[in-house]
Image (cartoon, rainbow, N blue to C red):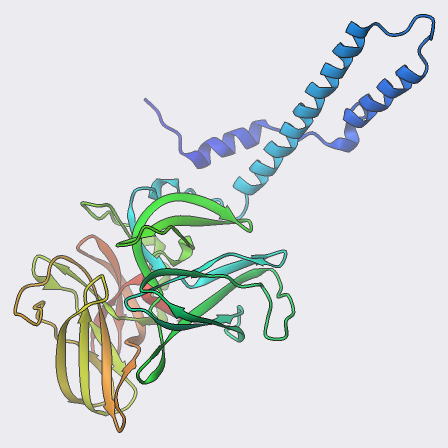
Length: 375
């Protein structure tokens, strides 16, 4: 039996369907109604229109109006489905993906909803950026609960002016003991559907450990899998990164059969004491590693896949945070890495970029990439 993808089916319909042009249809519903009224005004008062004939003509008018409306609806559907964002994402439904919840779109002054996840309750602030990376609005959300949260943006900048239609990014900052720190906006969850918002496709995703559905921009997807096995995304999706310099957040490692992918971070300056906090998918710290004094440059977290009780960690994805000691205590820094992409490889079914940092080659999840530059 031969099957056809939803994109192919849409293209077939589109090629066979020609939208009706109103200006080429002089006997449309407006003309029909005008003729009917004229007929009623000019009928012979001694021989008026039979009730049956009048009812039949009204039924014909109703059917014509429904046909015209259906024609308009089909035209809009085809325009939407055949737009620039017409990639078939239906095949992702039921799979587990990782991506980033850090984009919103604005259309006619209306912005899509923003989402973020917190391991612990706290006070949150959102910074919204335009396409150039300039902050245009800061939204104070106040106290937020642990888990998946959402927020609304009125589509206005700091001067209370409606922003131009387009795509915008955002960062979420959470208040802690040492001030505000940026929240990791990556998310892992199961795709339950595909929807359109402001003319753009989004994936409906239920994050792991949550019951709330969030909208994820497909362009932020870093990996795709199923509940039991992981399927490779096409290597060709990432080979165009080869030869370019990328900067990404590297605060994630994958554990499989007691072995973890390497975790790396960069220090801009020498630090007297550096700690690594390993956290499970729920955000709970399971291990703290003291790396001691480190100089500037790229470093490895050196996790032996054991928790604080000496037990081997279960298979899955784990986050790590870097804490450095200063005069006021410990502060968190983003585990960022910059280097040139030299190739693409797979680890446990997930695609990774091979990144050269000058002191060696490391693996980076494509979903962690925040900036790409020509070398």
